Image 1: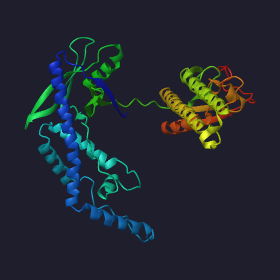
Image 2: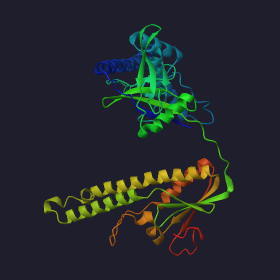
Image 3: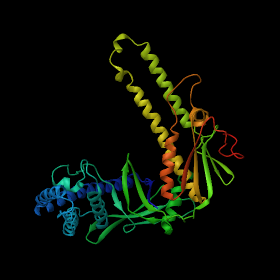
Image 4: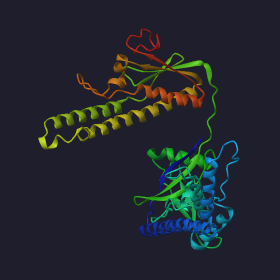
Length: 421
């Protein structure tokens, strides 16, 4: 499973003086992280300047261009890049430079900050072209990053520890070691996480599973958001047990008349996609605003007319984008939920019934939010659902098929079960 993150608010101390002192300490540590970030980029630049990496990269690019222009049969192997984004020597120099510059930072915090910046250096894509981002930095084609605001304070299980609540339903705690007073001597701070209450019950469950080892703790950080301090805890969930898919099991997905989607699996019918009220609300708002703009323009003064069709219909393009984005996001969520349910139930075949013609207008998603007697252009993208389901079924190994049915189709998609079609 991928890495997830949950953000937990840190509770204020009852004593205002102690609370202000703690905030001041964290603010100073965040400022030290800012200095460490800028020092990282400056030291990296100095190391490459001393090694004349720019000249080596420019020569390599000329050789690479000549290699691409040569005959593929006789040009040989592709010339490798002679410069490394982060050599071992450069990494050691940067670490020692940061420990000397930011003496108040915990060494583990410096290591985590360096790892995060190194990952960005080697993985970030360039704004233009296929050349690596760090190569464009050395060739003065892009701007070197620089920070002016206090940065989040990274930490992990090496310099932090979760503390369970002392009473049932209480708040969890966390022990952080983010600063040091001398070499080998760190400062420990105890913080109370706001996890009590019904609304935060899920957060308490996640913390308990991290503490028990069911979830693997990953790199986290302490950050300031709108005057409040939060602990952004990252964790990795275990992989779900794989269920063998049966080719004999078949699922049928089709849009319903009174509900967004109906899913039939082995004789059982399940309603999916929620109530669909948000689709009706967006369509109604788009149609109403389009009608109002048409009416206003029809009775507008002469000075507002005669400036071309693009200006008169500019707002319609925005309304069309609103409807398109709404349908796209909804279809993505529904397609993922349908395929995940098929995998969970061991279904090996998924058949999607795509409506056509008058059938599409009689479906709930095809007519929800429309005005009687008014023709509009908010048709539902049934074909898009087929494309999304096809891609997700290929990833999961499910056989996918599309079956179109229109008003003249006599066969019912699910003869004895789905009477709503």
